[in-house]
Length: 386
Picture (cartoon, rainbow, N blue to C red):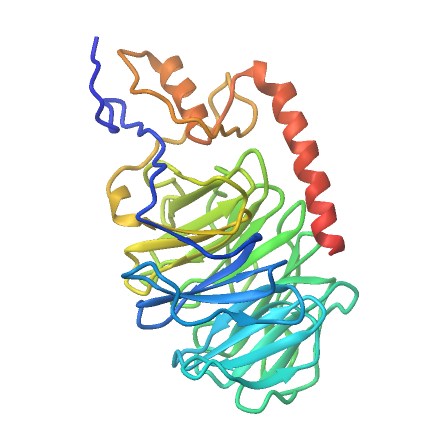
């Protein structure tokens, strides 16, 4: 029997990767949003209840200046394409736009913003309003004035994203639908599409603009044609014990990073839809992820206040086989405990090891999985009410 401690076994299965490259600690409550500056040298993070945005020096791991203090809970941040401004969205207090050099407030927008994004050209900021508004608003990024009439949505918008050419805005809704708008006309390019069975937490465009990727409380990550709304290929289903809460796509368009309530960050091959290597383990829910501009690192914000940085190159060329449809397995499952290197194992033992890497559990785990799904559902409803 082999007793090798190498994380890559003859079966091609890897043990979970638990050690981040860096951990940034400064927030006292859950981190809801993380973003890289365009030069890749700094990261910004926003924490909900401690009402701060912290800017981090990636190389040293230290805070770059004093935290940006807010009057209300901060739930989202976006960095302008030039890197000279930071927009932060608060639950009740609106949007604050900061000068990234002087750290002074440039202006404020008086509207609650659940999600926000800068257009690729830096001309616009778009916001998804809080519960009850059912609209997406466009603002002039220089002045903070409304850029046009609000875009009327199918339901409460939970996420927004600009297309790479800046001509469209995609938004996901609380009831599992998504929609794509033409900015010039305000009309739907893709009407309301029932993409998921539950809340759409996150949406991103591929760098060429042809594809949309959505992450949902139904635990799936799905890919869509951005012009037709037709699903492309099979879904990615690794976040089994909780919502898939956030996604980011690499600059080369080849990989997707996702974070979820199952306390993992995962990297996926966009073409094959397979998970690349093992999952990155975290201590709490991961609410936000982002690739570095050079695609080497993935940063994630945790619900315990930590910001973790992982080296995505460590996953290169290690693709996990797709065991989701093995007859002995019924739903996705994840444990936070690392497993030991396997010994000589047959197909059943290989599938059993995949269980601990975030895929499918044995039938005996039904009760545990059902309990976890109930807990995740209760937490999700509370989040939507907030």
